[in-house]
Image (tube, rainbow, N blue to C red; front, side, top):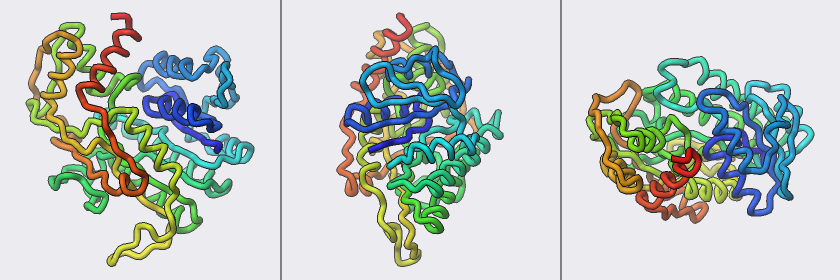
Length: 346
C-alpha cells in the first residue's frame, strides 16, 4: 500500500517509516524540520532512511538514494493547500499522522505552537482525508489526555474531560475532531494514545535522553515529585509494531457504540503502551546499570502540568490486532544507551 507518514523525521515517525519499507510498502514522509530540538538529529534520522538531506527544499519531493520506495517532502501541516495538493497527486491508502508539537512542559512556555501544529495542522490532515479518501487515518493521541485520573490502569472508557496541560487538551481535541469527520464524511479514523515511548533515536527533551546525558556527564538529574513517579515506559519497536498492526485493521461503522452512546462512525481510540507501570527510580537504576555510572540526584517537587503516574490498559488493541509488547525496560534502556554513545561518540 501507499502510506503518508507525517512527522517522519521524528522519533516514532523515523522508526515507523523503516518498518513500512521493510514490509514492502511505498512511503511518502513529510516533516517541517522545525527547531524545537536539534535539527541535525532529525536530518540524521532522514539519512538513516537514505535521504540526501542536501537536496531537501520546501515542498519538493526528495527520493531515497537506495532501492526503497521512500520519498520525503519538507512541509508543515499548517500548509493546508500544499498538503491537499500532495494528497491529490499521491492518493494514499493510509495516512499516519505523527506530526505534532510535543512536550507537556514546553506547552507552558509556547501554547500557540500547540494550537498551530496540533489543531490547525490536524484539521488540514482531516480535510485531506475527506477530499481524497483513504482506507484508514491513524493519528497520535497521548496518555496525557487522562490528566490526573487516579483509576489505574487507564482505560479508553475513562472520562478524559479534565486535561492538565494544553498539550493534553490539543490531543483530546484531535479525538473529537476525528470523530466528527468519521461521522460526517465516513473517514475511518483510529486514535492511538501513546504511553511514554523510549528507545534509540529518541527526542532530547525526553526523560531517558536527559537522564543518560546527565549521568554520562556527571551532572545532577532533576527528579520531579521527589522520584515518586510511575510511567508506562514503552519501547519504540513495540510501539511501531502496534501502529503498523492497527493501520492494517480499519475501524468498522458503529465500533464504538455502547448502551449509552450510539454512533455509526468508523471511529475508535486505543491505548498503546507496555501495560506495566515502572517506578521512575527503577528506570534511573536501569540507566545507571547501562552506563556503568551512578546518578547524581536533585529531588524536586512536581512540575505544573505533570501527573504522578501512567499505566495503560491495552486489552482492546491486543484483541483487535494481536499487539503484545515484549521488550523489558532494562533491555530497551541498554539499547538506547548503546545508540547514544555511538551517535555522540561518548
